[in-house]
Length: 290
Length: 334
Image 1: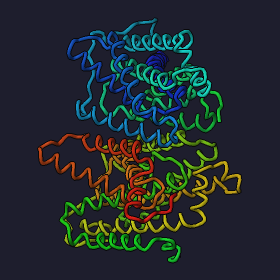
Image 2: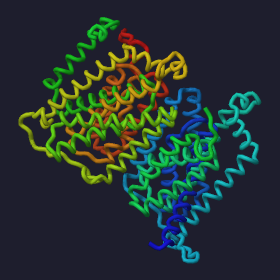
Image 3: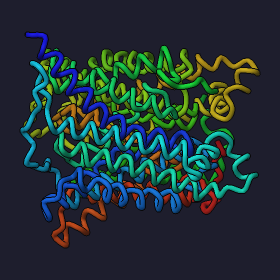
Image 4: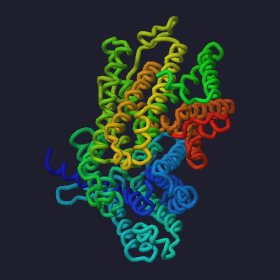
């Protein structure tokens, strides 16, 4: 095989990986601040994807254009979820929190299944088969747009946490829960905001991913797992780590699909997870905590 | 040993337990084939729940990948039976060690490298998913298009090859469930049970008083994996078809942990009660929906999700501790 094929596949994998990274960023933000593992993460993304599909089939509006409203819907959804169900569980044992989110995920997947049925759905944009020629390389236009959007949203998120008052307050909660209470921050409201932001990230990622892959309700658990793998690989709680992990997994999957068979590509992601858990459990960019 | 089994059990609990067992033994002569199948499913979940409970309820290790052991047990015995005509009773001599090796690898990696809590749960999911994708490409056992056991209309039951009528499967799973209950009771009231509970409550403290936590956590995983693989053998020969997408799927792992969670994690009777409640409620809901002509995939799982949600929010210790109080038979709080 000519070298260009490898390079083409690698670039395509990295662009998809950027979207994975944004999805994982949502999970990482939620865990980093609330210390709750969002087991319904992939399911929230499929909700975003289905909203994009419904809007597209009704009004022919491009998912990338509708990304902001979709993220807003998911924000409200995430905020409500944290404020109503998850906040009372903050001081419960870890397995109890986990079960709560397993239950929420189970309900989400199957409500989607009841509404939309098991068949795969997708959107057909006018630029679906366009591509850019860079030298001798062919780059899929859809993936360039999706990857670019993921970078943009991630940049906005970084800026939000660094420069805005609320972003700094949320980071304060993450650093020192008791301290945040002492200085008078409304921690529960900030937690709800954080979960909302995490949900908005994954909703935006869903709007991008729906351009690249078909959606079925069963995609939810698979992408929850993928988000975990990315976040653990990159370092749980580290925002740059999530993006890096996303790129790494996107690249690994694309290469595995090329060199072996596409249907076995997730095995390589799992293998990567096992290696990271064993040799660097804090992840590539994570700090060791006990 | 017999003394240990009944020691400290209130008389009322013995009478009620004996009554329940009597009803279960007589059940095939009292109910129709449909209800017998429902009872088989209930006992199946009671058995797998009991096996999972050893890891989570006793030793405090949350596994979300128990479908792995079900699948390994199912595929090993089914493949030996179909390809070489080996009886499942011989087949389990291969199936149990294979599942135990699987559990031992996960346990060794996790406990040696201090992968705990949620990370451990994710590691177990990852191994189950790894197996799912692996078996999808394993053509010797049919790959993703499934693996089938030959079936016929049996007039007599062949216990040696597990070919036969529902009644045979019913007594088989009943024996397995009672056996698992007795084993768990003996372990929990024995020395190792106290070690497990100590590890579950505070691992650092357990280590500090000299308990070899690695060893006893490994023992919990190995025992749980081995017992769960037997459920897989039952699954393969009862349903006669195996698909990696179904057997190893994460939703199987979740279904399998619902009964002990709803019944009460760490209690002996919780998995049994949980299985009765969950399957009973879901089958009656199914029957009602069927009557109204509604047959939508996903409704049952939404119901499971709501049950789980209700229990984790309202009854975090499960239904059994509450029922036991009402009946006036307090199981040792564990």
